[in-house]
Length: 304
Image 1 (cartoon, one colour):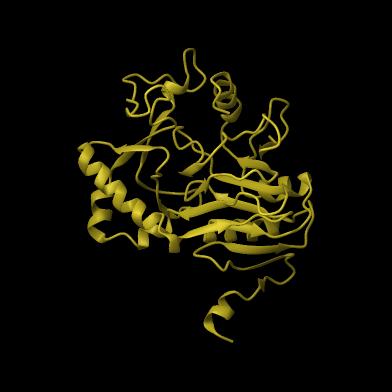
Image 2 (cartoon, rainbow, N blue to C red):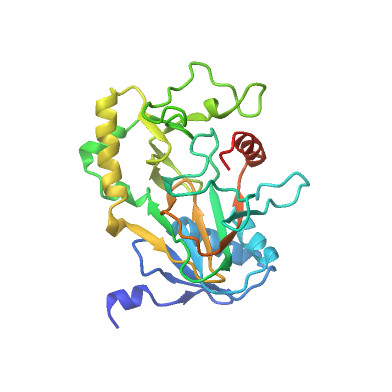
């Protein structure tokens, strides 16, 4: 057996109903979970350890109930509730106009990078997958730290980056949207899309304590305190490593696929979508309640 074959062999702790092996991809792990919604405490520990190690977990082609998805993702943290206090079930879909994601191509991003508290984990399940639907692409901004030159890492040390939801105004897309001098806090009177801004350290740790970069092409405006030209050059260098073809995992959805990823260290993107029917059921982990506020404002302005 070759080294690559050994690395992709299934492993399983004694008595645990979760098996795992490395994905045939630049990062991530494939799981086989024989438990239903009654995940035991020790199996929750295994799931958290695998999530911390790999950042992206895939369960392939299995009928997974709403209750099972909730149980498995709950092992990673608090699920954000809906208005009734139940886990917030969302759909990313091209089947109706209540999708919780905007239409069209989405370049690489972390969800809520522009919020003071980005959510730590996201799950999506292939509820409706009709043929070769639009894939989802993933890039690992923790592993990119191993690829960046030492002088680049030194230039990022101690720096923050500014992130915005809308880097360019829909009315004047040729102009970069300026950061307001005074930001209104989320949910306060007058808060809206102009205030979707936040500063985060460029080098920080995710919820598991794993060092990671935090910059993405969709939402990162600039490195704070650095001249614009220098900031643009540093970000371009980062993105060249981060989004290199050999560093990206493209998940081609099959019915019954579940993908769970660390939103603080793994970015996702959607290429230009095709019209094949696709509905992904989503639950996410969040320490705060933020989604309903963003959806309310986003729908008011026609963004989702």
